[in-house]
Amino acid sequence: MEKIIRKIAILSILLIFLSFNHTNSEETYSLTIKVEGLRNSKGVVQFALYNKDGSIPDEKFENYYKKEIAVFAKGSSSVTFYKVPKGRYAVCVLHDENENGKIDKKFILPIEGVGFSNYEFIGLTNRPTFSKASFQMDTSMTKVVKIIYK
Image: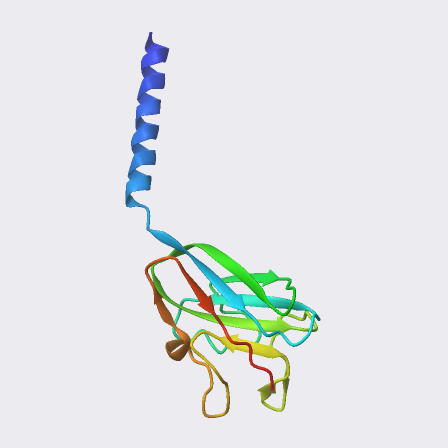
């Protein structure tokens, strides 16, 4: 009888713990990122999600919150990030033609396709920053990012 009472007590504690974690767990969402207009079928597409001011530009992809690498077909690709907490985020997408995991440049301009959330073009006077590229996420959403080639 003592063993049964002990098992019931342990189960009760476990159930309380699980219900506490479930009710106090942070609400999360999914974020789908889509790109179109990739100029060729070389390499992969690298999607990086950022959640901190000052984290972009990130030419070597060292400061991201989450990252996914995807293949593509017919000039387009997409990924979905799951369990993303409410907050401010920015996206960087790289058409990594040589699959080295970083933004390759000639002089100061990228030679592979790159895109950021909220950016239609990138130039010397329009360099990407987290504050310009970021958006508020408080629901599941889809973002389309334009890939820019120089």
